[in-house]
Length: 313
Ligand SMILES: O=C(O)CCC(=O)C(=O)O
Ligand SMILES: [Fe+2]
Image 1 (cartoon, rainbow, N blue to C red):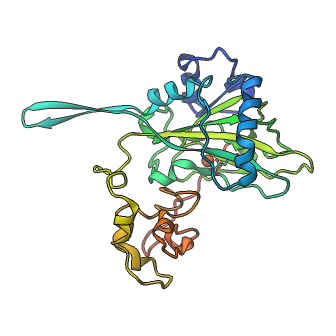
Image 2 (image 1 turned 180 degrees about the vertical axis):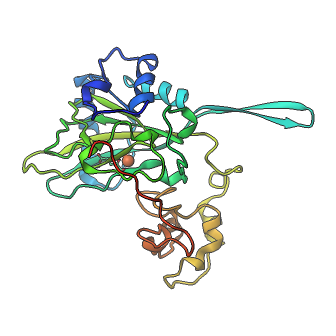
Image 3 (image 1 turned 90 degrees about the vertical axis):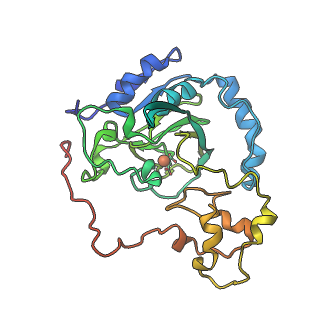
């Protein structure tokens, strides 16, 4: 059902005893759900301590903690929304393929003082999820990913809490996200927000002078959103380098062979390594703006989607 008035956070907030059964109806209606106290304060303190050296270094983001120990709902919810079974004819016999989630991304988003509001976006644009039509009733097959934002610090409108547009997961391609439709997802440490990747949201400016906004993030995507043959594990990077040309000019075409092996970005950042194109591991000079196509004009004949007006305005 479309949402007639602007929702409040409390409309899609649950306590620590939330289960997939109680979370899912809120995801259906709002595209997101906040679980208060999903992770205990003690665990958050320990996670923050463990991460601090890595944050200080800001280079190597790997961390071997038990990230999901309390927030188990996230794994179950992701299975629930994203796992898929397809029946396909093999001659006259129907074969069934069961696809299960894979971890798509994990990290920390730390917003320090200053910065600026990020533009409202749908994360699933990376998977070319077009949402060709708006719908009154959300269904799982609209989604390519599910994310969780776990607060490592207090997240407030002042210090850069994420902005979200509850209900925007059912919008079609012509509906333009407006700032007046957003809510700040205000969280205390240990609170967790689950979100489907069709939901409009954005990071926000930290207007405080003495606080950092600290968010642990993780995404699951469909197990079928990858190449059929794994091109990365069997081939050591030294072998892949053999395919690279000696050309050093700033031309991404020069590396077309290894791009096709997956050592490249799908716009804007799908397939990144350490926030860069994997081509850097092969010693390529990368023109990120070219490869990631940020701000590029559409090709001739492709028109931007039309514009629909917000009912809240
Ligand atoms: O920093 C945030 O609050 C959210 C950022 C985000 O979701 C994004 O960059 O897609
Ligand atoms: Fe995002």
